[in-house]
Length: 224
Image 1: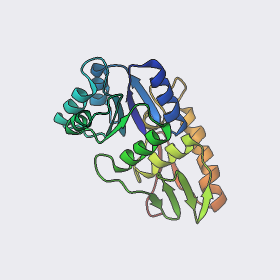
Image 2: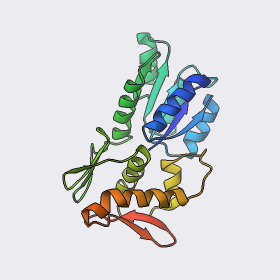
Image 3: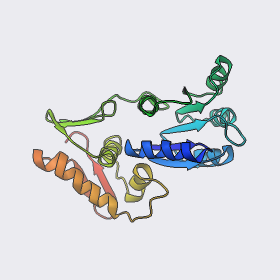
């Protein structure tokens, strides 16, 4: 899952980014409204964490502009202002949720999970492929009723694959959605993590869920 964080306070931006990355999200960070609009127009984010008090245009204006342009990535507004009028203004601008500073990061992550589950259209609470079940709410994966322990990145990669059944997903596309722009390694990291997943969700159960498409990438087939 890929998230855009719009926050002009360096310490807060670092804390939010670090926490989201630990949860398995790929995170891009910008510090003002113009940069936020530029990235949100060019990329399909699964969610946007948007501080209200950023250099212009402010968070309300950014959210309103995106909605007017028909861009419906879920928006979670962050603000130090907690008046009813401010909340109403944010929701009227098209925000999906509103969190007042200071906040507990556990609440931020829970609200973000709820938004990314729903997305611009309702998303299923769990993704199922035969006897493989991935639940983004509890962050658990089971196969044939047995729980499989995955790292945050393994979980994020498996979720993206399962949400695009029968699609051939290139390494660059997987990097873009599961890692982020700041990643400086090579696409070989995808091969490494696919191997990790196979060792955990396939081989112990005698399955072959993730298929290599030579020269193109990877896919999972539905109904197998």
